[in-house]
Amino acid sequence: MTKLDQLRDALRAFTAERDWNAFHSPKNLAMALSVEAAELLEVFQWMTESDSRSLEPAARAAASEEIADVLMYLVMIADELGIDPVEAAERKLTANARKYPVEKARGSSKKYDEL
Amino acid sequence: MTKLDQLRDALRAFTAERDWNAFHSPKNLAMALSVEAAELLEVFQWMTESDSRSLEPAARAAASEEIADVLMYLVMIADELGIDPVEAAERKLTANARKYPVEKARGSSKKYDEL
Amino acid sequence: MTKLDQLRDALRAFTAERDWNAFHSPKNLAMALSVEAAELLEVFQWMTESDSRSLEPAARAAASEEIADVLMYLVMIADELGIDPVEAAERKLTANARKYPVEKARGSSKKYDEL
Amino acid sequence: MTKLDQLRDALRAFTAERDWNAFHSPKNLAMALSVEAAELLEVFQWMTESDSRSLEPAARAAASEEIADVLMYLVMIADELGIDPVEAAERKLTANARKYPVEKARGSSKKYDEL
Image (cartoon, rainbow over all chains, first blue to last red; front, side, top):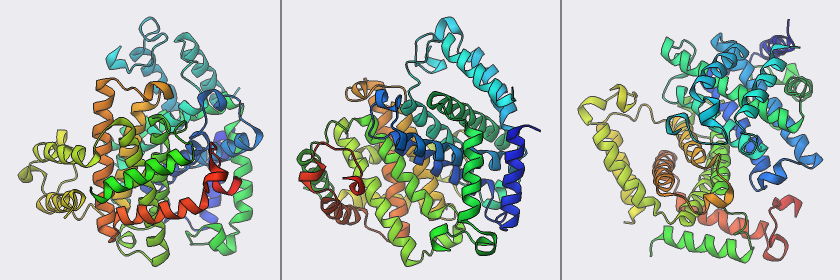
């Protein structure tokens, strides 16, 4: 069992012990995930890109907490929907490699349909 | 090496081959993560909570793609910041267990400071 | 001059007095707008739809504050880009009326390309 | 009646004609608002701050459409909750002036509790 599977199981137990399943519809979990993603965004909102590459300790600690929250809600919504998030990402990365061939995409931030 | 470590390494190679490191400041990756979280949210926006618990195949496939995108950006921003996302989640879950003791939090959706 | 024009002018003065123009790139204002939209979302995240239609005073006050924040950032980003947000909305509503003809869209939450 | 009041009335009619009131709980409208805010964010996600200040016509048109969508959902959720968004913003701006006194806030992007 991977560490991500262990995290999923710990989250299942955490939720069950507190009787929170009623709140954890995929709709609500998607909302919570968006809220946490925005809290991560907030860490960077007035920072230059350059400063975001060398965070001070307080900002780095804040980012770490929000990354944790995003991952927990992501694991929970994937679990509710019966989706393996790592396998889904592997499939998507393979698809992206076709949509963004190296020779066309190199150094460009354009979307695949504009390359 | 776990599958999540393998995904991180595959994303590093994908980014390096396309010379995309210049675009991948933590600030930009946090934006991309929020955008993908909102695309996941969009799947559920007009659905009842009940319907979100039994998705039709097209909606489930759409959710799976967006979960994949969120995970990829999460792995990339964590990698840029030198943070292990699973360890960060484990620490946060331990902290949450203290903030939401079972006897007080059971069946409640209140924030810890209102319990 | 409408009250929205007055708000725009008050925000211009507020920003100029504090020398905040350097932070208010459209990119950063779009981030701040998303963060505030998520804070509004947070008010509703564990609520049923039904409860969201009859908010308790504290939740209603919180929603009002976040609506205020979203509107301020919306006015600021539109101002930076030289866009009149009300005229843009009027144009979009006219376009939406064509995309969602009454007889096809009635009672349906489908996107226009699935109607 | 201001142009914003006219927009609110046009949105009420648009929604009523299509029998969409059932979908327009404040919870769902807050989700839709967040989704549109993220679509605005997407316009800027790989752009430098500097480039975001001088958009090319296609990006400016895209931003204008998303600003329109955000404003429409903002007007609708405020209407559902019985909140006047411009008055709420005026109150918030007055409160912000106290939280961010000119002499302390000038040239700083810190939050009021860190000034």
